[in-house]
Image 1 (tube, rainbow, N blue to C red):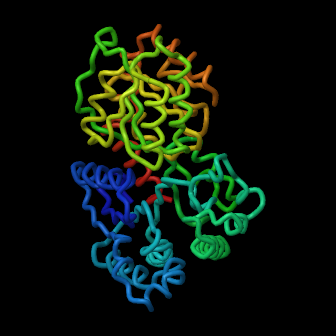
Image 2 (image 1 turned 135 degrees about the vertical axis):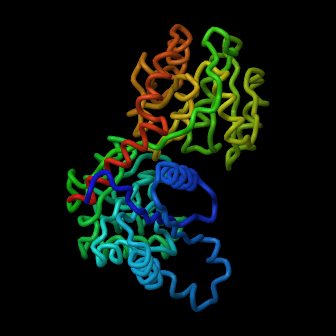
Image 3 (image 1 turned 120 degrees about the vertical axis):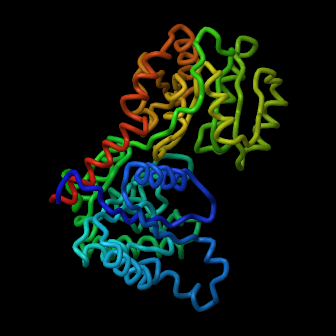
Length: 393
């Protein structure tokens, strides 16, 4: 294929019942491709459909999760009618299923799968359970997940995920498609599945559009921002414990988000008289970026690997450094003194990182990092190169 040709892309995405970051990424990439002259055909299903399923269809769901025959024929039809060059998949669970891969390859069209999580290796998709990092399904086999009810705390639903993954591993389909990993860390984990080879895996981060003015570091408020779900996995309890230890010397902390630990947070703040901590609740993405832009740093005390924390890239886009746990993708993003500081999983290390970031101005460096790696222009160049490579194999 001529590398100058604008490929026709079939974009495939299965929406979860609860909206998430993947949905935003899909929308952004679709718009970016269309703005750059590609024809994009969008094939989607929504898990909200499950609410209206008859009893029979619900009983059949474990089978259609493994291979949805409707998807198979839909995808083949679209590829032939629209003369698709590349099938780009984001999510297949539950209704689309891996049938999309088989349909595309049957039509001799390359598949690119963006890897948003670790589901191909871990049925829970997180490498996290019972309050700690867990990679048992890699080292001991997928049946570990069934024993611990890792997917939705259900042995039955976990078993369906495990059976689906095992079947598709047996067919070898995972070794026949291409992957976009969002970070080097994600690529290293994906390659733990031996049938996937390094040449099949590309690295392309997500992007954000810079829409907020960069505030000089010296004019920023004496505050730090936490943006995320109020959950143990996000380390919100560790963060508040750190502010408690700093006492009267603590800078202001704005907590933006909701979640299962919301009431716990409110009670902890009240019981310990944490006057420098303010819970803001749910805020729009636009408002969250404004808060980060006026803060000295974004702080992410995550307790798990994360997928691709968009909040980090959004912070870079407004020249704000990041303080984060030296775990998984958050730890792999941060270079001490260049774009923020990493901390160990303890209170004293968090406090040390806060003291360190207050002594340096990384605004200009972060602006360069954003422009060179996470802007729309750079992202399109990366994605276009990937499409050209897979269509010319």
